[in-house]
Length: 449
Image (cartoon, rainbow, N blue to C red; front, top):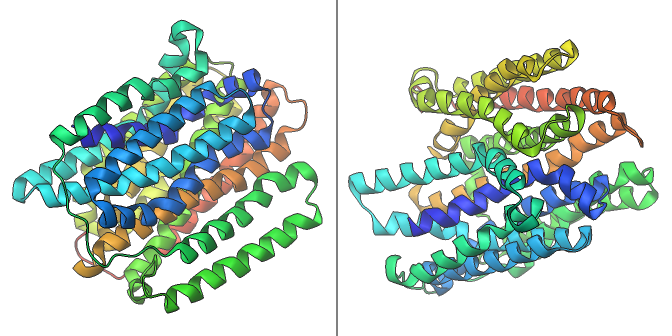
């Protein structure tokens, strides 16, 4: 339970912030770029630090690193809750992402070493359910906290709630989590970490800031610099004695295609949640709680499909990913039609439920399909790389869809403009779903997931 609390609050904070964005904009007078960074900054920091976090756990012991990461996450959450300016909130969100990268890799490692047989299966099942609940019900929990306005904290409560929960959990770590010895000979690839982090920032920075500033020359230099840095990272991984990403992993077609699928699909996921929350509150005039309640339609579709995804994957193999992406794309089309009806929010429920079902069909079997061909020696590293691509994809998706959304929204939007912006933003999301379905055809054919 102590391990699952850490996973729950870190997963929750990936999603819970979406429903609070309109309140953050109003209270801190945050611009469009700042609100994108509140979401993307966390994802970039988490994605860039996951593999390094796993290495640190090997070096100093997983229990110690889990406790340190959770402590840092509590401190960063407090800083988010007290942030006086958009810049302070963004910096605190980046710190949250770094702390999450320190603790999240330790959980799977500890579970893998502490349990065997049926107990291990139950532990991994509980891990997956915990992440699912944190993701699907993040908006509802956030809306309820904002509506409750405990002690006048408003949107800040979504971060401050982590402080007592996290601090209490840290106090129990030593007594409940088994110690793991540090592995000898493990080293950090600091140069690789620096190259990939700078390369990703150089890519996302102009995507978020460029539209607002009219795409000045520095944005194009930044794109070029990103390409150079990421190419240098790839070369360094081939030469490094302790690479962040083992080059041998990419000799497996299933893995190479699979991380491309993870990246393409996450381009759609994070952006969908963020801009849907903005549409519901700023375009439909719903409160944070009402917005969160409407997300339960998506959650119902997700859980209904994810419980059957394994059986579907066993029958159609890799095509379950194409099916799920297609179902989500149809859900997005239904949302566009529901928005065009200009009636009550009930018109949105079929589209939300279908989009959620598509997510369940993709996310539940994705790891098994992608990692099935990876040898045991590289299994942990492969899982870390896949998670990294997912988080980075989410950050890039927020930026790319944001270009379309805010370009249509204009400088002085009214609710009808927000509706038009969300409809326009759904089009690239549908495109990312189509790319996911196309990439799934490149996976090796397998009769079972």
